[in-house]
Length: 391
Image (cartoon, rainbow, N blue to C red; front, side, top):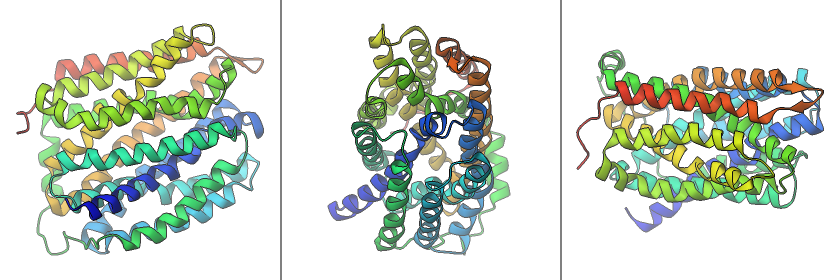
């Protein structure tokens, strides 16, 4: 890959996750402590991304594969999303905040699948080159976490406005990237035939179910870990959470080598187990046992990279190039959509169940996602058949 192309796509990935990281980790704290939303309302707000993922990524992917240049769709979505995020920073009631957040999510959620597809389109060997580019997304997340946490902005509207500004900039920058036309416009590859073939592949379906189940502990992480850290008395909670993204850098870069050495099944199994173990550590730890909390946060890199990222690459290898955007959109619909929606509802309800007189029993809360992670690991280990190792 040419150095100039690498740098351009690296900034593209950096901004994609800078936009997301600016608001998603700290908004739960802002809603709970500044706007005094209930745990159930916070769960519903975070559930908007899941609802959006069930609606927009698949159809955005179809448009990119069949009708419009991918970069133009991304520019439109980011610009509209930036305006909506600015509007959110001015709202202080659930009745107004929720529907606008839903509209924002409908614009933003397709950009994950589309940015992945666009990167895959423009690199020679996705399995080798994508992790080296995706690591810049992690750096973007770390940058915003250090900024928001270091300046103690979790309970203010500034993270929302920072995300909005970055989104507007990304809408302009994406138009400077290599043009990505709808490659499937003249192709006769059948979406239904490809989908039927994938559904009949038992291992593919087992992986899909496992990644969907993992969305439950994932929802707990984004919705409530920041609030947990602040409630426990840890300082600079957003910056503290960046340790997960710091370890993510190492595991993202390690992923291609781990796949070649261990094979796909052990790699994903390690990632799923990490989701369960990390929450058990949070349940047992606290301000009096900070090491367990730090280790639990640090396991995010292993958990995310060896499940979600490994799954993205595996799925890209399973579908025709002409259906790349559609396939990534479909996976977003199933995992980020239905899985995350169920996860956000469960997370909100669990926190509400374990809240008494505005005091949350965090040790009990974390046992739920921890148990889901361990169950999913057993399910995956028993039913998934690993494909032949990649050369």
